[in-house]
Image (cartoon, rainbow, N blue to C red; front, side, top):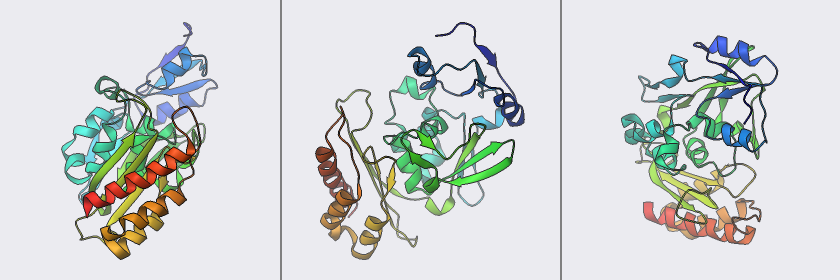
Length: 279
């Protein structure tokens, strides 16, 4: 680790954005990904802009219509235990608690997990299934990015170098989905997912009652809308068809965590299980 880093701790979003304009600057939230990469020599920023002292980024706010806004500095441990998340968006809580261990989740943030844009990001599948929006601030102003447009490739998000994710918004229309996040990894301890399958179903009051999303089996996390439409039309009786459609839709690779063939087969197995558990 370098010993001559500049450490900056702004107290407003605008101040943070101005500091990030300096070359060689990196955002610091939880640091659970950045600091190991710095130790390994894969990243070498000259200064760190710590965002944890910006008050508004620490909040989980409930909107009047039943939606939820999660600030960029909120740790995953708070996401998985927040009453509003547990009550209305339990799929996110379930995915959040699979990230690392409890001490790590006291530091790691939902925004950080999202911005790493890992194909295996556990929280990404929940955010895709829940139609989240990502709020971004920059010198050009503020904008919203639909989560379906956020992931561009492995480690690549729809963000420019000066962009700051300020919050992640869960819409009220996605409240009430329940289901499971079925995850396979090489070991029971901390490890990235080899395959992750989220299957959710609403209580029947929404037009679209099924949500299906996959992790670690394509260049980006996937939302399988064609599989959802199949389940809308035929229900849980179509679990086998949904499993086969998911196998066809995924695009896994072979790496040290598993072969493409194994991953594709397990996608089918886990989609079937998830659908049948909600039937």
